[in-house]
Image (cartoon, rainbow, N blue to C red; front, side):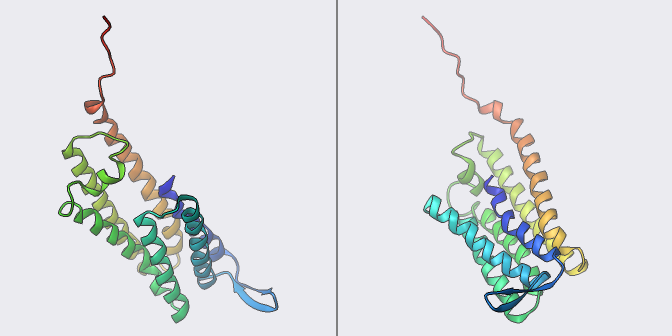
Amino acid sequence: MKQFIDFIPLLLFFLVYKTEPRAVDILGNTYMVGGIFSATAMLIISSVVVYGILYVKQRKLEKSQWLTLVACLVFGSLTLAFHSETFLKWKAPVVNWLFAVAFAGSHFIGDRPLIQRIMGHALTLPAAIWTRLNIAWIVFFLFCGAANLYVAFTYQEFWVDFKVFGSLGMTLIFLVGQGIYLSRHLHDTAPNTTKSED
């Protein structure tokens, strides 16, 4: 479920974005709700709330969650400050490519690929399989970043839909593929639980 926590703020962002723009009075102040900029504000607020709750419950955030939160605050704030959605369009590509760099760097820094450090406590696999799996994640993040960038600057009317549901769909497909790939190799390293009896 951790992989999908990031999509909670995105779904709220999508709902506000799709809302017909209207003026709303809150405590005597008038705010516009609906459209890209109020949706960006919702993305920032909901990200702070979601990751804030996680931090309180877990007493920590994973590095990937910190990166997602900081990117949301930086690109979201720039979008609102300069009243330009261009900054927000760069958020997903930059975050995905930073993840790709982190996974690639783990081949040269440390003794294990990053995916093994993340999943190694739950799975026992040959070193070659961990390496292939890590490379698959690198390719996945590079592809997701490129796809988000292409759609954002090519299909203006479609990019928000893709940002939310396209990213979710690609993640689901990749995770299913990863599960199928792993299922072919888990039996090779499964411990022998049969005990001889005297």
